[in-house]
Image (tube, rainbow, N blue to C red; front, side, top):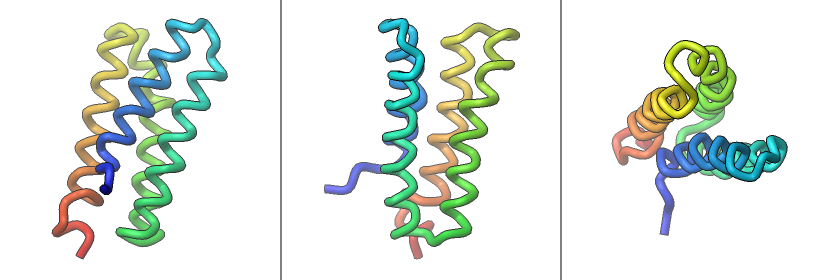
Length: 102
C-alpha cells in the first residue's frame, strides 16, 4: 500500500516539531524530519521525476526553515500548521494525485 507523500510530509513537519518539543532533544526532531523527507523524496523520484522531486524537496526544507521566523509572529504550533498545510497541499497536487503522476 502506498502512503501518500502529503501524509509523509505532514508527519515529518508536525512529528519532527512535536518530537523536538516534547523530548527536549532537537536532533531527535531532526531525525523525524529527515526520515519523512527521505521517504517522500524516494517516492517522488519514482513517481514524478527529478525536477518535481527537487521542487517538492526544496519546499519541504524551506517550510522547515520558514516555520522558525513565522513562529515569532504567530506562534510555534500555528506556524507548523501553516507550513504543513502548504507543503502537504503541494505534495498532493504535484505528486499524489493520479493525474500528477501521468
